[in-house]
Image (cartoon, rainbow, N blue to C red; front, top):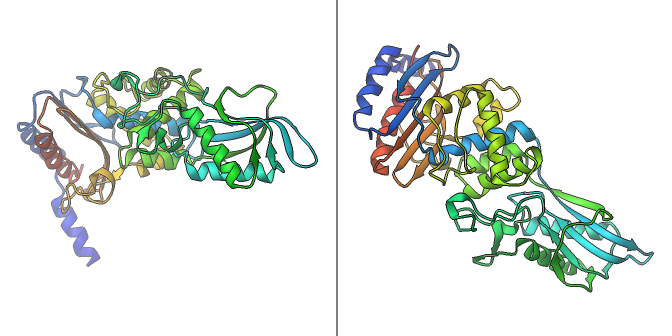
Length: 390
């Protein structure tokens, strides 16, 4: 059975010239505002190029720039920490004559579980009474809770982009415009639930230099966060990661600072995108198919992040946003990629391990299209790419 499977795969493999012919034929059904680039990763040779240097809106394929940068800068095992600190003195009875501070680290998974763990850490430190207040500090990020796409206001598409965004910034079914205050409220309630008395109210304020660290709650690894960003195409995670990159490596916890770092990382691979957000919601983002393939090629050679980056991508016909697409084709299980869908935009970029034993990077960016038609074109092209034999 194993041998017959290999024979079937070999029989289905096509040459480079046949691939170019088939892709060119399929492109006749695509919008003229389309760009495609396909590259053999081993040889570096271009297998197909259609308007490959023309900038297009990538939609959520933009997340590849965000997650690859985060993986490289923080490292796949890096984590984002939410800290709890105390400002004041603790007597022999466990009474803190001062305040508790909750300092956000930009963790997109910050939630009730995180709060409960932090409250336990306070109790384990021997504090049984807080005479002062519980403060939330979101100063790691700027005060723009949205992106350029949302006029910098928080929306359901992005959540609340605060360094201390509890449950994505949701208070019940609504978004809060005071995430630091709300997070402090949740910690205060958790402290009380843990048997710690708190006399003061919750509020928002930056941690003073005199405060002492009690402990921290780490996020999942950046590798995991990249996977949770790319496979379901999570806009909130992408935007939080980009601001986190800006805060740690760009001198400011802003989308703009993070975008500058991401563009710098991309340029190191030969890519030249215009990046205005982390998720791809803004149509001001621009990348060429060639740039995206250069990024994919560069990351595949980056030993530190290549495996983590590849594992973050949805697998055709199996999971994430590609779970129901191209099933029963040569692409199923062989191609790992990031989808992009927006108003009049359909895109896909990633890798294929082909039936001919080649590793290929590809980017298909279709603008000014009926989305269903754009997807149909993509879903014909990728199985063709997956049969390339060299």
